[in-house]
Image (cartoon, rainbow, N blue to C red):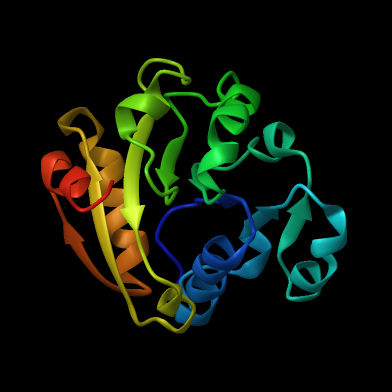
Length: 173
């Protein structure tokens, strides 16, 4: 069954992990590919994903419109520029950001976003594409609703473990 909300899922960074998350959600039967938008910096990498039914684009800021969940799945060195690009577009009343970026703290990301945008740190593995991921999740107490949503999403593609922020950072963020 599809998730009982009208969430549109947006992955910024359609590399290995971003694509694995999207494919896992579709395979689980919980989300249609057409509700998922994937982006990459290079358009030549997108046709195969579009052929699978995903919406695709190279424009991160424009693609966020209409999407409630925004998954950041880029290389650590790309994160600051990405947050500069999309930070002004994210709306605290409508968006939850889930980051799978290695080494990025929630506090660091929040410095680039409007106050109140929920940020959840997720640490999945590529087995997520086949529904076999073990995903650790963490968020601040203020982002409990976003954490609950992320937990629901990632439980559909494996199992989850919610960690305190201190424990998540001890594991390498």
